[in-house]
Image (cartoon, rainbow, N blue to C red; front, side, top):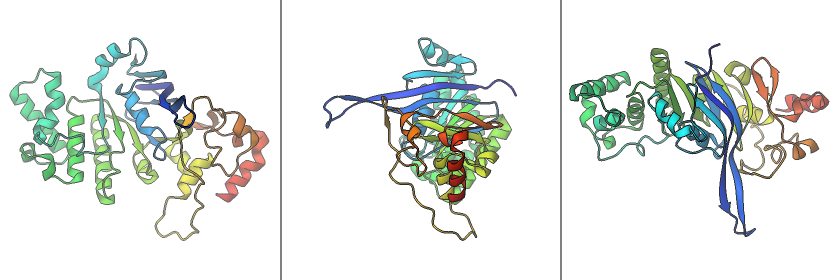
Length: 335
């Protein structure tokens, strides 16, 4: 396997907020010591509930949010730390971002052509003809007619606007694209079209993606590997086949159990108690312990680390230890 083009090590983002009840400032970890790699031509799916830190992670990968601790390296250049800003400038053209809300990321007063050409205009070095030809090429590549260039965002459907945003992200021929919930605002049929477009573009241009989403069905259709994020930390990471056929963390199992399946009659899965929450920086123990039906005393005292459970499958759970084998068997039988 070649060297990864994205290397994330112990990436952490802490926000400081004032507590009205306690009368002092709290430090909350939105992202907590996250580590992963992304290889050339690969899609890593990052999945989890709202508030789990997915979007914050994606934005730190492109330098739009500074990291509190840890490191991000893009194409061998570390973009965090004292030299981060200078290094980011050297790789900026190779990295792009696709936002969740296409209407919110397009200027309503700019034509589609001008919106797509924004990166081109900022980079410079394009003649007027080259600029026009590039706009037309990008529109056709993403399945839109050339005549779209003179129209405005409100004249398009949500799916068409997302195609426009994707076209803009390709303007400078990037190699790595962060897709932040790119289909969550679309209906199911349009979601499939955009996912197919992203896969076609990956095959055509050799793109690598970080695909952020909360929909496990969508993540399964596009990802080569999947990382499950809970309350800022990765609880499980594996190839798509391993994760969906053999989920090992209680949270992953609960997420998959809740996915509806066509033609399958079964009892309504038990919902998890509580909801995902940001963990204070000074709290020890497993992030999932307050909601886990298999919680043990060690879970409240010590935070589990990602450990290899076979091949490239890694799980952060005390249930995976040999001493907890009986509990792990009970988990397998009950979910």
